[in-house]
Image 1 (tube, rainbow, N blue to C red):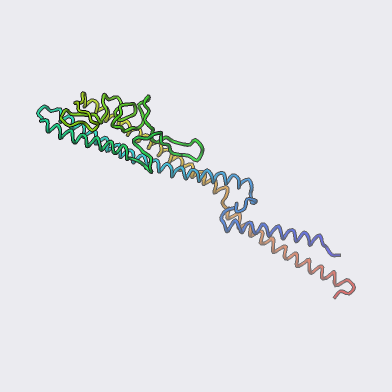
Image 2 (cartoon, helix red, strand yellow):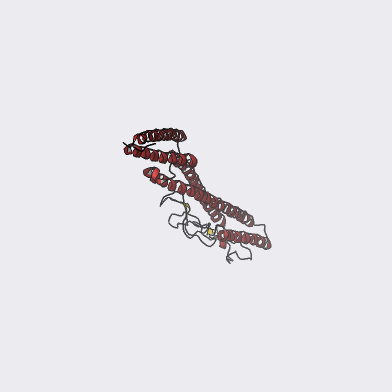
Length: 298
């Protein structure tokens, strides 16, 4: 009697072993055990979530790099403003000397006006990718993480009430601006010659040195805020880098092929396939023997 059940079992075993061999071969060739979601649906879902986190964190690191470059640009511009203010103060001290003639004070006023104009130009033109840095209309933020709300303010717009933020405005004396807490705006400074100030003021400025000292302090405060933002971003960069390394390690554990296990599995499948093939051979021999016993058999 022909043993059909035995033949069916061998065919089923061969198909199962063949599928297993193909899966092991794919995992070995690709280096990843999740080449198909069906290999491990739950692990595939976790892996894709980690992929989103890793790629988002990598982009956040790039954003932080842009933010640091922006802050470097802002600090360099503020450094030039501070140097010009120091020169204006130096010239004002010189102009206070009673030995000077009117023409000498006029020459001093001309250089002061040039310095104030330079500060005004720097304030209007200092930008990063089109974003004004020294007269920002609103806080400038960086997306410093992979999630919604993971933002960091890198440059704060002037806050009049808190007297904080950045606003290099030669016409202003409001909180957070260059002239905050001074009795005059920088554009109005005049040393008493016949030439008007940059802003058109023709009257000698009272307490000019104390006002300039306040302006220099204001720029120092702005530079300190920029430096604090840079330190914060650098700390976030270190954190994101470590976090991304941990995510990638988890992804590797979940998604990478265990080569030793895969090769062992493939080898076992190969041996199983050989045994099944041998069993088929024996089965065919037995069936041929039975058929030869039947009437009309060869």
